[in-house]
Length: 149
Length: 149
DNA sequence: TACTTCATTGTAATGATTACAATTAGTTTA
DNA sequence: TAAACTAATTGTAATCATTACAATGAAGTA
Ligand SMILES: [Mn+2]
Ligand SMILES: [Mn+2]
Ligand SMILES: [Zn+2]
Ligand SMILES: [Zn+2]
Image 1 (cartoon, each protein chain N blue to C red):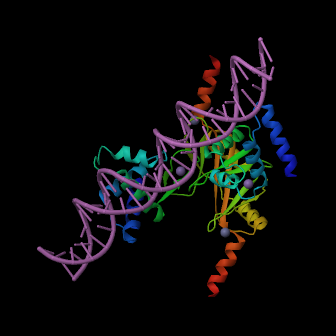
Image 2 (cartoon, rainbow over the protein chains, first blue to last red):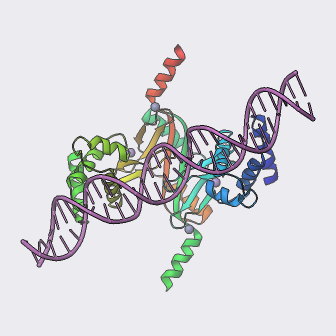
Image 3 (cartoon, each protein chain N blue to C red):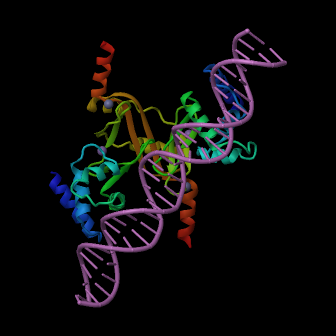
């Protein structure tokens, strides 16, 4: 439930001495309810109606606060701006090369890859990043449709 | 041999109607000889001595030309600026969380991950991106040394 | 040589993010 | 509760990588 997730997030913040402001509450709530991995600016615009005076700096500031608290992950792709993902379970992302949509998927960890990487490079491994790229079902449909013309 | 790689690259360019200018030659040569996945600005500064009049725009322009010709890959991490890698064999990267150094490593493809991702999301998969993060041997040494104090 | 096309250069524009100083809100203490 | 302190927000300016653009130069072609 997203209600419980919000509650837990607020507890986590309070425990690390972070004040719960209306802006923070709203940003968190929006992130939890969002399926789209929004950018800072998308969050800013989504909350404009309820918080007409909120500064875009506040969005950035608080996303950083949440990131440092481990509540939010920042996703960076080559282009444009960062996207933000409320942390629940570990998961990977698959991204549409045509429309840019980002979809979650689960996969068992890649410990074997980490082991081999560590073995051949001598690094002590902390983590890894994996993304899959392709064409989403909806863009596949459109492709077919446009070929049929 | 890096000589052969340069020659091949020049042929590829010529075949796709791209003129070989002294600047392009130098940028390619520098990229091929470089082990460090340099940024555009690092390339610019490295060639400043030989090309005191070259514009940073030329570096960016030509890196794009090379990327479009498939000769160079652009590596984008969250922070700062893109890094560029002359394309030879397919390989992955492992990145030091402390000093930022980027080291190549080879690993058999991850077809199984691509298959599963495609199966659970309905995407038609084109490619994937994988990076491993950790602490490089040199930073591990330094860590030990500073603890010993 | 004249014409055409492409490349380079210098500089201005862009756009995301951050820095900073002033103001406001929340918390603690007396 | 009021004063004092601390943290958060706001608005705006600064930063910095990258791109756009117009003018100049070089190369290729007839
Ligand atoms: Mn996600
Ligand atoms: Mn590499
Ligand atoms: Zn799509
Ligand atoms: Zn290191």
